[in-house]
Amino acid sequence: MAASALFPNLKYSDGLTVVGISVCTALVCEAISWVLIYRTTSYKSLKSSIDKASKKLETMKTDSSINKPKAKAKKMDRVETSLKESSRDLSLFKFKSGAVVAIVLFVVFGLLNFLFEGKAVAKLPFVPVRIVQKMSHRGLQGDDPTDCSMAFLYFLCSISIRTNLQKFLGFSPPRGAAGAGLFPMPDPKTN
Amino acid sequence: MKEKKSVKFNLQQQHQNGHLSPFKFAKLFDQEASWDKDQLGDVLHWIRQVVALVCGLLWGVIPLVGGIWIIAFLLISSGIIYGYYAMILKVDEEEFGGHGALLQEGLFVSIMLFLLAWTLVYSLVHF
Image (cartoon, chains in turn red, purple):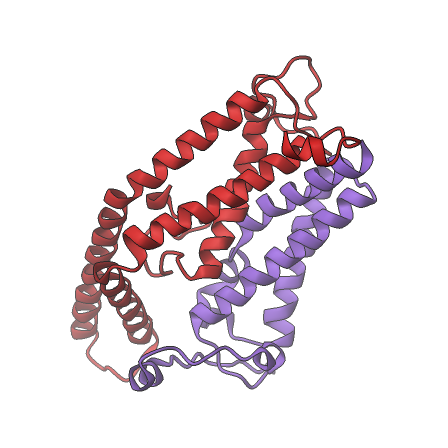
């Protein structure tokens, strides 16, 4: 491939090709998402209401000046309900527009699979656990568990490059939205 | 007694300006600065990514081999994050959702980035 031609002395130069394609795919996907989702007024207003509701909820949680706990709890419930509804609407909105991005990702993965099937594109500096080996050794010949398949490298690229790109461009879902949690993946509705 | 800082939300400022105030890098080491929950979360996220990249490059070049070095990375990365918000910024972690919330900012993504950098550098430099 391109990296093999540029760096003929490197045994695992195909890894660079996979990373390069992942970077380009991430940029294309974010561009598509921007056109279909992020620049629309619906998205902006939903995001704004989620941000406001989360901050309002945080203020109410830390505000000790309200003396009536029942009234406070009722008010907080209303804000929480509003937050959940806005988060749900946001998810639904992005889901509908995310189909195009999903098709692009499917095509790119198919292309990479065609190019690198059965070939180790990198060498892992550790032995992955059994369950991870199902992906890291996918389609490869031999028993060396440190041989890395395109699928695993692409998975690492997808998570790390696209999530950080979304964060850098300001396209990450608001923290107040449902599903932020311990393992924030690249925004799934644009996958 | 350890000084604790309370969170000051910038709602009024946002409404006045119509947008968040621009982030100033001098704030990164300013103990007196007030932190918005989102801003602090973002800073901790990017610190983790930088640490992941540096560790991945270093581990790959040396090279350090074996799953134990993933644990080492986690300890180093989390130690740096904890040291930053608890000792440099001296924020009150309870105001931001506790140690768990702060330590998990960008954690999973940083692990993926670390593995990517480590694997790539190791493969390209040593084979």
